[in-house]
Length: 261
Image (cartoon, rainbow, N blue to C red; front, side, top):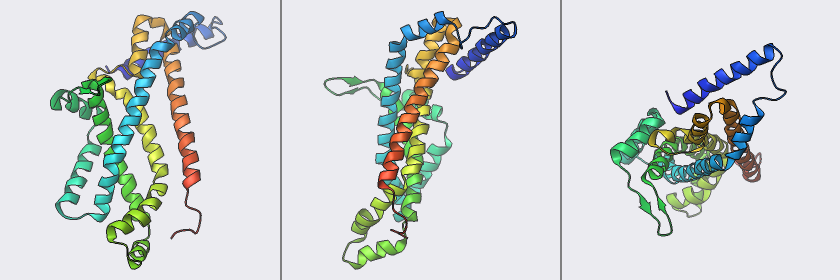
């Protein structure tokens, strides 16, 4: 059974025990036991390291997804021939493959090496996690940007050509700025999905937030409900914070009504 499945099962059993106590009037006034909460807070720094890994994986994967996904989306809109077909097929394969399979292939089959940055090194598992999550995100981001680029009226591209811009310059200076602003809602959703997908990296041995929560539960089995509530709160804070930040970004750069067709 997976880490997530084991945690869910144990949480259900723990919650059932709390409900049973409540039925006979012996349940505490708060969810969980004070000793278990003390155990969780005593190990908050351990979970914090997992949260930092989760954040790092999310940011790196989103950036890789953007660097690959935006050009791929542009190729699908403005490209032709074998390059467009290759990008389209690669996107279909990545979107249709479970993320856990992609991670396992990256780590165990491709064998991504450790990267030495001089002052620090990135383990092969972290590199494989970033590549797997990033390429999967790129496949979805390409569709976000493809739709955004296609939504800009073709007349604006022709208007750019009419003032002496080349096709590439017209796309770059006229179409792309509008497409990026229109893609923010979809990008926000993808950011949240990648953040949650980082929990799958346990398959290649990375101790991110959920895996570290499982480690604590294994150490003290009575604290499973408290551990799950705590890591759920961390996920909620991360998701809420990034969504509000991207909401503000979207409001700031939203195209005013009537400004474009």
